[in-house]
Image 1 (tube, rainbow, N blue to C red):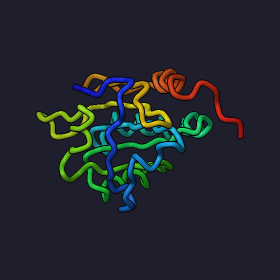
Image 2 (cartoon, rainbow, N blue to C red):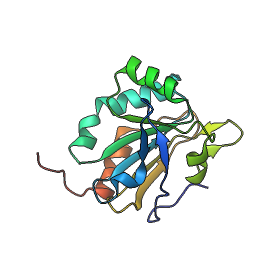
Image 3 (cartoon, rainbow, N blue to C red):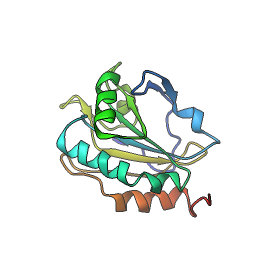
Image 4 (cartoon, rainbow, N blue to C red):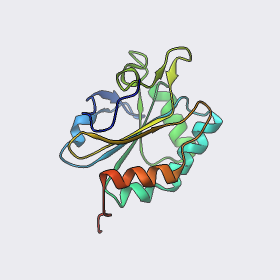
Length: 159
């Protein structure tokens, strides 16, 4: 079962697409995080979904929110995926131990061997303020992200 809103987001450390280790706790006290679990790089639904996020990256940036994608793909696959699509946000590899972070967040699909499409909006204090999960094969919409961002960032940051 997925973690509930208004609970502390579990801290973790995973390698990004460049092999650099990123710890969720590094953002605590600095900026909110949109943690986006997705099943598989290069699959059609995941590609279109992450392309939509990339096209709407300003929505996150203008609200001071760090956008982070997480999948069970290896960092090498995630790097190739990000480069081929031109993604300008962090992708983390939950490859080994396989799906450990997805399991901790309650979104790993044991029968499939990868994470479900699940998003957790985590506030500056590390608390999950909004979350949504879609059915297998169903993409998340930008409107869901807009609504969720209102839960953690009431007004856009002025540049």
